[in-house]
Image (cartoon, rainbow, N blue to C red; front, side):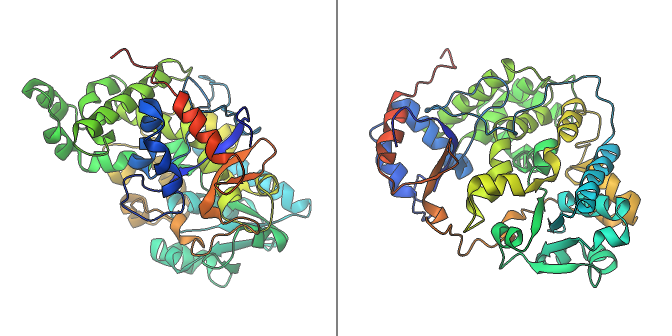
Length: 424
């Protein structure tokens, strides 16, 4: 690996404060004492999120090393006149799959029972014929029955070929002749579940800040304005910083402040309106974490096929341009979230409810993390253990910590990384 190489993907993974065991931990921890304040800040992003795979699609978000967006994952141009509804976009997406089935392709839906994968299933059930649905398999586990037992009983069991997601990986489905359909980017168009934890514990974070009584009083006053465009996210600055901090030490809180200011710099240099608190968190995943959500399956959850073949073969349901355009113009109108946590992804809930008329799922279904239900217990590529992969280069090669020049590459760039987005 050469010092001037440009990456398509980077993977800072493994808790850098020693709270869990990961093969990447000693690799990154060895650099901590050598790379200075900028490099340590970037390593600490992983400490807060247990990963750092962030790259901007819009606005400024400096990285320690040169990196480009993988072709095909660029952000569409913001179109304030875009008027299609979520229902329209979902049905049209299903019609794209319908055409591909009629062209001879088969599909395996990665179904967790969660809202995103249920949208996919409902769209296909409503827009494909019985004969066309015979070209669709459901890749799932027992967890999906727990998340949505009614859909399972009425529309899946005995009606589709079932593939066990706790055993098979993406390359297995592809080798069987299926194109996997994933809803990995569902959070990207609605806003990250990372925000939900703050909303749920809002009062705690207000009282945990070191703000003045007047600031705290205002924070309590705007508690239910998280999607009000008239209440700018900067009014929540104190609790955002406290929430982003990796602990309450001076260093931990300073990291929270720097990360907040880095996010704000990205917002201020972007071309898409970001106003409310929920806009702020939505923009983080729709913009800087989007690429990670889009390609992690191709990189980590297959053994035999190349990253490029995985990207070309996997259908990211919500990555269609119309879904992204819909997401950019439907902030703060109730489509993404209303006044309770249970309304998160409201437009998707409503789309499902019109099909199954299940009030419990529509009104009370909570966000659960489904990624861990895939086969992660033995996640190997044929050539390199996935737990040791730190990057993908512009030839779509997975880069391992064991490859020549890798440590020198990251240490060089982390050592040169400067905190240049803040005046203080």
